[in-house]
Image 1 (cartoon, helix red, strand yellow):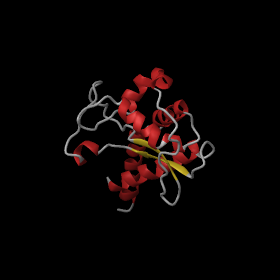
Image 2: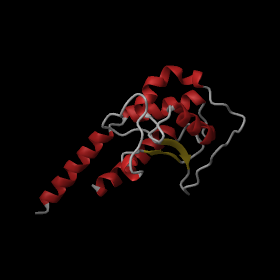
Image 3: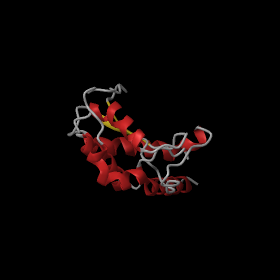
Image 4: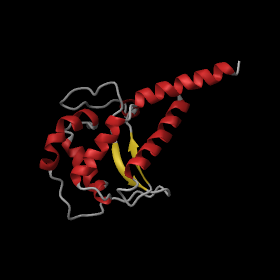
Length: 160
């Protein structure tokens, strides 16, 4: 399973690089997938919308450079306006829920992510959330991991 996570991380980096290099001043954008969030935190609180599907969710969408320098709070004059993403709300609730306890409205998480990290990208607030959702919805992580596992099994069985 460790090799699957390594492959998964590598694929995320490639996907994010391809999706964002032209749009930001950073080398790549990192997605953090909280698949183990609940067990690592000894439990979690599910959002009002219910337990997320058995799939990866977005944990964060962060500008980063190859030196692992993660700029934060780049524009303290920016305000989070939920009205700019109101029509994305259903997709955000599904793909980017807050699992932090006590259970909160995910809007607090989105506000935090936009102000801390999104303001350091070249995206508008709407573009920031749309881009994160688009990448998440266009990359089937479970299928990638399943294919990687199958490939590893094939390689291992051919060595016998």
